[in-house]
Image 1: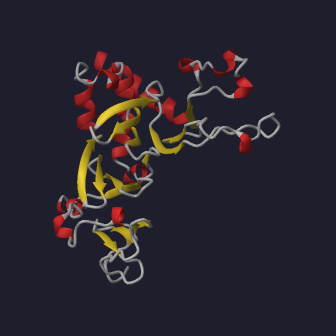
Image 2: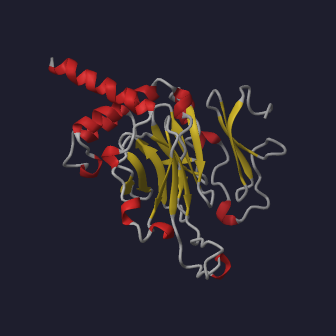
Image 3: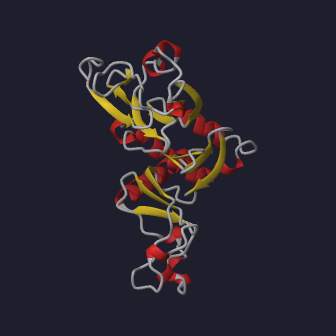
Length: 285
């Protein structure tokens, strides 16, 4: 990458369908190039549907981060590689169209936007939570804002149709319909004590234990089992969101019915709870 970048490259994705390399360095310089020659990609073997529509970056939004002196914290690429999303230091997600190099949507997850949505319950009823829970979550968010290395742990993904962008936020996991920017679904809202960070989506067929009568190879391929796997900030747990109940717990409703309010807190949660309680005492005193 010496030919293109004078600073270390920190994000890199090979777009096999488009036959070029997407790179971002520490100065937030974005490049698309042939991985061998490091020249502007010729795409000689790429199919017509994967041809880029520009010959110069000047005609794109690839200078957006440099012009605004922003840092890239994360990069995600859609399954068909026609879209990519950047998580940026202003805490806005920018979704790019690969063929045009243009930004198609910007999603604001900054603290200012969070507070604004919390205070506008009429417009954002799904994103409103109890004020006490909001204050506790805001403490975590403010701590993260001072730790860029932690924010760089945040990941994003697309569903198998590439129409839905899935990413973790202050209030849970958001599912955004890209064409309209509408919030299609919100998962994990009840887990407000956790700040979700990394997400991975599985939308394949359900998998049976080999001891069961029906093996994985004989399953009806139409029976999908979408599952979302998530980790959280300073948590030794990981979370699984699924539409089904585990088979070994199906006849034990008392096992999988979680008592959220009485779950034991880890040390970080205890510390945040203590800080929040002290703040409330100070304000009331």
